[in-house]
Image 1 (cartoon, each protein chain N blue to C red):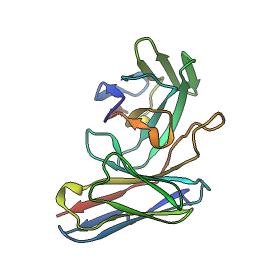
Image 2 (image 1 turned 180 degrees about the horizontal axis):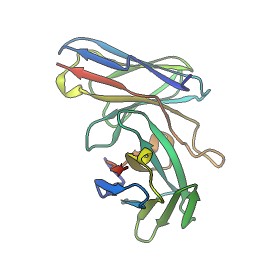
Image 3 (image 1 turned 90 degrees about the vertical axis):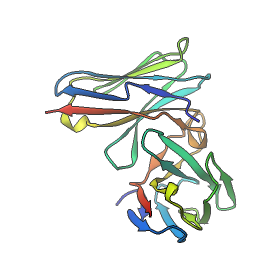
Length: 116
Length: 110
């Protein structure tokens, strides 16, 4: 089984619909992240969470919200989807960077979202 | 914002050849990491090089770092068709501070 699991893997929806992407992990990491990937732009951070009670906005949080339901679960919501939110979304986890940890990110397999 | 910029954007080589990808970055770093992404899949961490290291090896991978030029290179020796993927450099120190470049798409022809 994958350490970081995302559902759904593919979703097609219409403008204005509410969408939730879910992420669960078995890595035991406190830190979880949501990224968006667009062709030619690399990955951009949407939100990140240090623990259940600590959620932070990333570079491109507008139009998105998140919920950290448990240490192992972090969901991303699009309250009213729009076409330019069509992208590949990744959940990731990590240990905090430090002397013993590199802050290496462990990614899920991605959720491809198409907004028509 | 992108800290690292990979060059070339795309690279096509024959199986058995070496593949070299370069990354330039703008600000001081503690370490630089390389990730690999198979088409449409999640990124996988390949290797990390710290700012006080100049070269690091892992299997067929060799990474160099030149902090004076703010650049790094990733060399894949004796490439295989299975190496076909996108390769990203990442700076920022890890975790939420990680900043990814736009990536180099490598295609290895069998």
